[in-house]
Image (tube, rainbow, N blue to C red):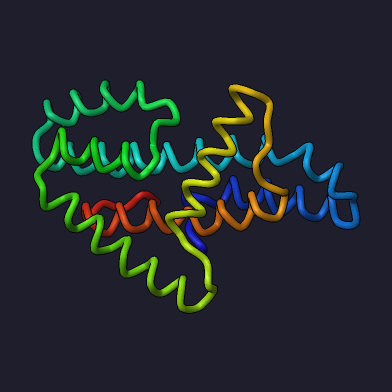
Length: 167
């Protein structure tokens, strides 16, 4: 998925792939934590941008409130957290639209690539959490990149559901 919002992270990952071409799995593993932190941070920024944009479109003061709330998001962006945020601060239609968009994407990717967008998104967030808090890696270098690329579709689904661009 090409998207200007992810361009800087994509460029960093492509550079790492070139630099590590031919490197051992052990050497590549040293960069999994970096990839997961970079990717999940980018997801978080996309979520903030979309939700802030949506809140701003409803009311300026609501936008300010949501922006302050989201400043403490700090990696709590798994699908359950995201649905909880939508449930607590927006109407049920937001969750419904998000679930519909995500399900459409999930079915399409599952059919084409035999991979789950939701599971990939979850795996990468878990990898980042384990790395940051316990210095444990749960993915290989290639898996972290694959999961990052598939996880972008969660952000795309949120953007479509809330009718807010994140570019």
